[in-house]
Image (cartoon, rainbow, N blue to C red; front, side, top):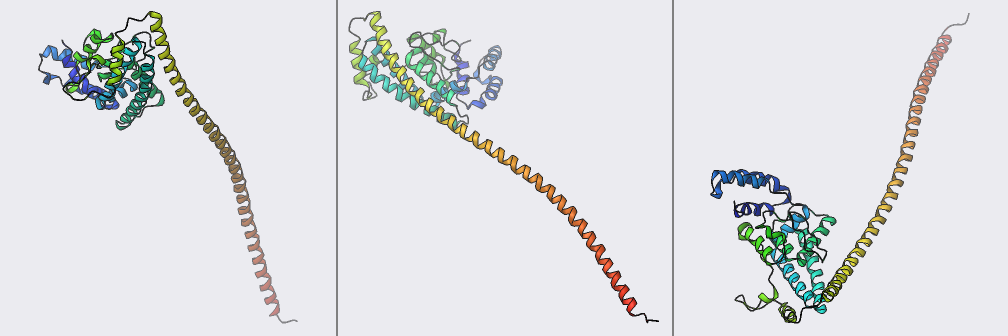
Length: 341
């Protein structure tokens, strides 16, 4: 059976809030009769729907971007294509500009993914946000990863080391063809063939040479830079050493940006550690004062019990003395009324 029917069911599932996936998958598996296929195919399709994996939280957050703001992922894919062109042309100046642009785009995309996750009822932690950024960074390094991210059916976080292609095995639900695990145009077409809900398939990132003054009107703002990169590619093919040096420079810039992020995270960690120490000290002091107060309360209760017993005892003694007084007064009166002999 082809993948279009399954992709048409899977697409909306992976665009749902995280907590609704399992129940919706079960319901979708029970309701495949409207697809217009034979009973045997319906049973097979239902089994495939039940087998759809639940994505990781980070992958789900990226899917939210694909569902609600696909233009962000397209922009990252186009930027990645431009960076690959600049690296192949050994255009260091373009690499620096594009690297700075990538940092800005990644920061905005991660922020938007977090906001979408909050809106869908599932906040993402700092660790998950780091996985989202890692996945989006991989999408700028490998066209296959860009296609996987844009599919809206991502299952796990991706990573790229800048040397090897991104490992996409098992990364996308219902890939259009085995070529989705590779890179380049075939991988992009594989994702697009798989389809996405409502015809929102993953669009291959446009390369600089394919963009221009089309029927849509004006070229994008980055067009002059892309044209410059395209012209640079006409130069003789650089040596492996030159390509390695260009890759090293790009990696060094990315490492510097990562170091800056690490420094900020370290500062935040130090602040959090200081707050933790202060609050722990306050908690210990409060526990000590509580123990003292409880000891004082215990002593006060004992004194209260003793005072109550003493008050009861003295009340009884006072009552006895009052009775003696009454008897003595009666005796005096009696003797006073008796005539002397």
